[in-house]
Image (cartoon, rainbow, N blue to C red):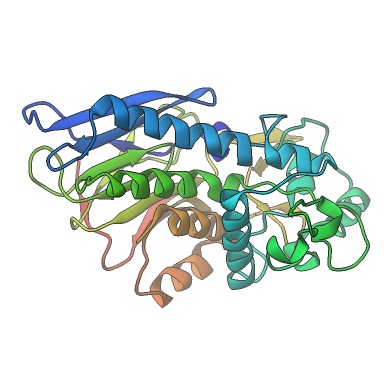
Length: 346
């Protein structure tokens, strides 16, 4: 999951104290923690039942989509095993294909070998040569794969990585890190709605919020200052985003927490799957607000690949998106915010 490649770069700031109807459901998931704030008014379940339900969803996601869990459906498929995909796997594959096409290949979950080669996937090795990158790039891309899982299923409903290929070639290696956390937040939020929850903040590394906080005001989320060494979410904030009270996904992607320096050159974690190399641009972080966390997650990743100017154009071109882009200009750090990005000074 993306959470374990990057620390979350947005944090929850409101307190649940002073309003007995609100509870904070917290727990552990795949080596990390989650926090869900819930208004229990009108909810048809106890807080413990909600915790158990959230844990069940997180476990299901982990055993389906995690690249770190060697027994997950994704890991077994990538290893060449036969799997029987569930609805979660089929849905996130289709969503990933949608964003691959919309981004012109800048968002690509079939670029797993590139992340491995550059040391930001599940392997750490020396920098790859140009020849190696070219060879790896030829084996990547969702354009090589069938548009949906359903089109690749055998008659008995099972799936192999080879069956995903449109034509013979190198077997695909999928990596859903760029979208899985946002998707998980949406799954949890959808389940909470089914139990009657109207006011919530779901923080599973990426955030989904809806309704009002315990103070009766829209939720407030902090955006971290994107400077090297700022490894603790909330320690050094650039500003605050204030919700309008509607359903919103809030995701920040950044190049300042995950990078390495070789021979004086800084390589970021944002790999451009179109070129096969780390993205080189002035964008330090992209915070995206969307109607759901899945969209916010995918677009934030897309922005970090294409850089400041194109990211700004992308956000402005869609009425359902708002964004805050923080970038470097010489030795200075500057920011651009879309017109509807509601912020509050610190």
